Amino acid sequence: MNLFYFGADDSWETLLKQGFHRRNTNLLKAFTRSNKIDKVYNLRRVTKNTLLNHLINRYRNNSIEDVYYCSFLPDNWFKPLNILLAKLIIFFQIGKKIQSNDIIWCYWPSGFLQAEYINPGGRWFFDADHNIVDDPNLEKDKYKERITILQRIESHPKMHAVISSTRSMLKWFNNESVNLIRLRNGVDTTRFNIPANKVDHSTIIIGYCGTLSRWMNWEWLIQLVDDFPEYTFQIIGKAYKSEEYKKLLDKPNVALLGFQPADQIPQLMENFSVALGLYNNHPAMDVDSMKIYEYLAAGIPVVCNNYHSWLKEDFDDLLYIADSYKELKENILNALNNTTPQANNFLQQATWQNRVEQFLTSIE
Image (cartoon, one colour):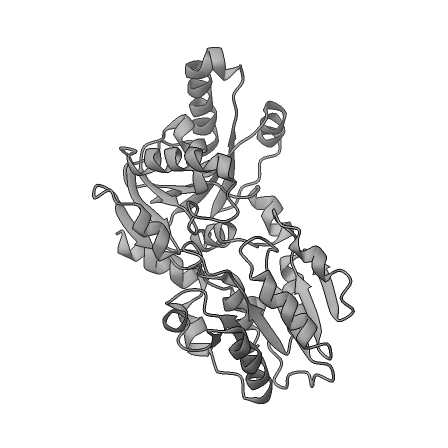
């Protein structure tokens, strides 16, 4: 069984250099390491020049191969011819036909659109990641377009299952003809080499790692900064469709570290005394936050607001969960003064590899 992946952030060769930051690339890597998959093909629609360069300098190994295709002529007039040429180019690169039991993996609507263009055979799986319908980051003028494509996805005749890490996204799909699979996020525990004796923090550092977006509970974060002037707040991540972070620029106890490469994150997290998970209370915010897995893997106590009803259940009661801002402050102090919960058993079950192996077993 082969897996054809649509929706990776870049070529495999580039991902090896840049690191694996997001759900889609971590799943891709885990698929390449599974004994249940013969080979992974990372399909990407590119420009003609990029395709030509790729065909001359192809990157291949035993587990994964980048496969490129493009539109040679304007699709407005030559789409059927372009699709035929794309299929021929793909066949030239993989040297075999796609079989009925092969997996066609489509990450996000963009991945589905790339797959839909050439419409290969096989079993199709659409990974929505989180709730991308009620997402606060989705612009209002894009909402109808998002609904339309999701309806097209669930009714696609080759769609075997719709996948998400969130319950609310799966609940939105209500077509009995398509399977629904909750595939949770995970963690690569090998990235976190926790020393036997953790650093004795002379300075208390409250850490946050993640995209600085509309998802965040900015009101509570800013209030924490003001209420704990004796603590340093280190914030890792780049801004996305939000400028709320600018309210922290003049705070003397805040260090905005911006985007950091994946291989630098564990070293930065080692300095955290407490880590924060702060999301808005919103129907789409039942997110299976990757940052929480990484905090736990780094051996850091995690303090969250109670942004969805399954937090305690999903994370095996390993988090300090607050229902109010007052309780959030109390939990930070408790986390600083108590032993960090042991998360080894939880993390062993929550690796990306385990997630993928469980998924592949379920569809055999």
